[in-house]
Image (cartoon, rainbow, N blue to C red):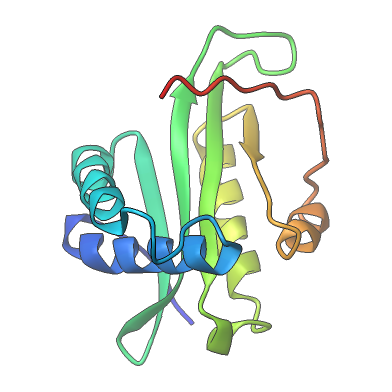
Length: 152
């Protein structure tokens, strides 16, 4: 099981994994505009990979079976994070037939190691119920004071 960095050549595999994740979570269905979502995701991925978006994957038999992403943020420093560097973790996903083999944990460790090596003060994420135990095991805590405003 080898972890590698995704680059622009992996865009279609990344999109396929992300759409599969959304379908599994019930966030999209066959009536949704998957074509527009895929195109927007492709545009974003190609514009940001290796810059403000870092992605890792695991291949088995030359097929990506697990992915993880990290969006990089820089904000005004505060007491708990004097560097102001933060990372938002998203899209940690393993195909169903490859689960329970420690892949999500290995990808999460890779992200945590990257963040520590690069002076990040905070990592955060939104978790599905299925993923919570992995994050808690790695020291993440639930904080429920987040508020959102969607502008679409």
